[in-house]
Picture 1 (cartoon, helix red, strand yellow):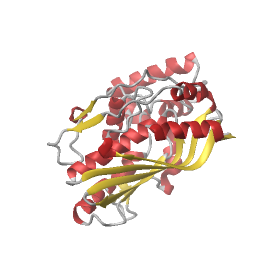
Picture 2 (cartoon, rainbow, N blue to C red):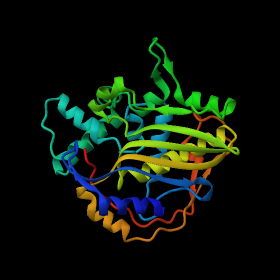
Picture 3 (cartoon, rainbow, N blue to C red):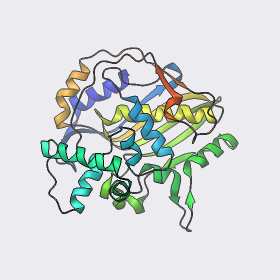
Picture 4 (cartoon, rainbow, N blue to C red):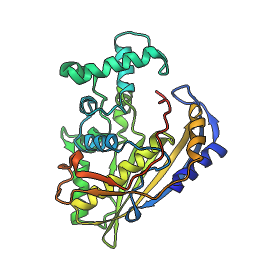
Length: 305
C-alpha cells in the first residue's frame, strides 16, 4: 500500500489549504492516480486496521439497489449514519449540534437505535435518497422504466468483453439535489471495466476523496467488486485503477495522517471468495474471507458532516 501512503504524504506536504462544504477545511490536490495489481494481493491498508465487514455489507447494500440505512444499521454498520441524522434534525426543526459534541453523539445513537428497531421510522427517516445502489440498479430510463447498470455490465462482459462502454455511473445530474437532502451526492462517481488477456480491470473516477477515512474503504470496496465480477463472468483479476479529482485531508486529520505515515506497511493479505457463487447478486457476507491480514491498530478521526 505504499502508493496510498505516498498519496497521503503528497497531500500533506504539497496540498493547498481550501474551504469546504463542512466548514472543517482541507489540504487538497487535484488529479492523482494510484493502481493495484489484484493478482499480487488484496489492497487492504495495513498501517491501520480496516473494518472489512462494514465494507462488504455496504457493497452488498449497493448491489441490492438499496438506499435505506436500515439494512446497514441492523448489521452494525454505521458509516452512513451522520447524514440522515442531520436531515432528520432539520426536518423536525431542531438545531443541529456540532458533530464533535456529546449532544450529537447521544442523539445519533438514539436515532440509529430507532432505525434499527422501528421499521416505520426507518422507512420515513432512514432513506438516503437515490444514492449509489439506486443509481447502479434503478437508473431511470426516461420512459417510465429503469436501467440495471450492474446487470448490463455482467451481460456485456460475457458477450462483448472488448466493448469500451462497460461503464456504471452514479452521477445522475437530475438527482443530485435529492441525494444531498439526507445523503451525499456520489463521491465515487463512475467506474469502467476493461478486459485484456482474460483479465478484468476496473478504473474508478472519484470526484472527492477523504483520503484518511474514505479512500482505504473505497480501494477495498472496488477491488472486491472487481474480484466478484471477474468470478461471475469467468475472468481472472487484473488491476484496480483509482483516479481522483479533489483528493484531500481534512485539517482535523493531520495528526492522524502523521501517525499513519510513521508506520511501515506490511505484506498484503489475500481475499478468498466462495467460488460456488455464480451470480453477482447472490453474494453474502459469509462468502468472503481475508487471509493473512495483520494490520496496525485502528486510527480514529472525526467524520466531516
